[in-house]
Image (cartoon, rainbow, N blue to C red; front, side, top):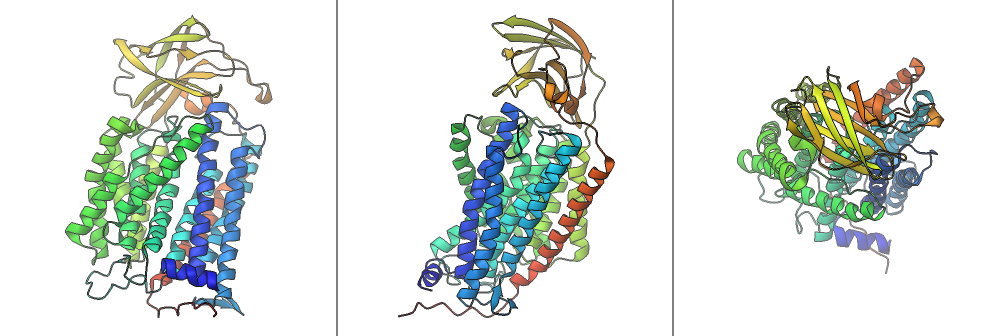
Length: 543
């Protein structure tokens, strides 16, 4: 009781919510390291020899530990007699803790589904397979549940304005509503972790080896910004979007030395500060009292000011592939994502919006994400010539037709899974003829190929692929001169995959659809956390 009373004095939040959100943030941080380590592991070393690889163990242990966090929150709420609506006998059951429990149980189901998927279709090395998407969704929603713990454990109603404040937004400021600087910092970091979770879908782009079109990247960035930053602005008040973006950069900055220390390339990231400023501008110019107007204004400014700022970052200091996307196709899709996500993010913060508006926003978001995921292969032929130099090779490429790569999003030589990752941009030396800007390895375990991205087209042609007896794949040797058509990227890079029973795919998609439906229903029920209720009586420690 003394410990719980101290937590409430130092933060302003109910003790059970501080215990849950703080310990959950630590575990989510460990899971984030495991995820980015796992992606780098696959890029640099190939597929796992066993399911429980070190990164997988890190992810599974930390995300399973969140089940313990949910139970610990319930125990703490019961021990302190917390003011929560749900009770089972003597047990006090915070709704957000039950949400976290549901998300984590669903995540474990997705992990089992991933194992079955690999048995049926081979061990894939892509982040965006159906079971992996379920795992990412459960992790992202777990971060949302940690934030909702603070919303549920607030000493005052989450949407009630402070005295004399005409804007009904949540003005989460030190000194108001009994919150302290430490309490606000905890609130900021939970919302930053939500933005981290939303950005994990971009991990393949962060490492520079996406298996989906580049035009999908700005869509994912705007979707994450719309959902995460509009929620942060309404939850934290003035400056909340910027605070969440800065918290995101702190967390991603802490990740860099860890991944680098493990011997892998440090992943890039979107900046999110221009997007945060766009949301703050929308709130300043249009206010937040009319939540639908705020959501639409945020979406519009994200699609213009925010997207332009992210593009400038990617094109200069960031080195991110966002700037390489085909425009205006990428801009149109990203604008739809920004508007749809901003509406849903506003609703996530407890705002009451018409159901038709929410359904339309959700449908818009699904469509703009689905369109660029439909990968295509163009009719392009390559004549590849290599000159060996001490185990590496200088690569020259002639494409037919000669203008096939003229407006390409990316046209590069990739070498991966040989103990690292090497990328060499192909520079034009004559019409239709290109040379790699550096030598690339063509021996050992290295997979070396030419990657070509044009709009929704994603294709590749191999330069050299090692033999893989485990899957019965023969070597594609490096030849001084080869003439071949570009083919699907997955056929070149993901030779591990193979056809399997259709029933497994049906079961996988059905299970994921069921999980998402349950999760969305539970999230919709979370609106009750923002309803007015009397402030809980502070805990007093015994004499």
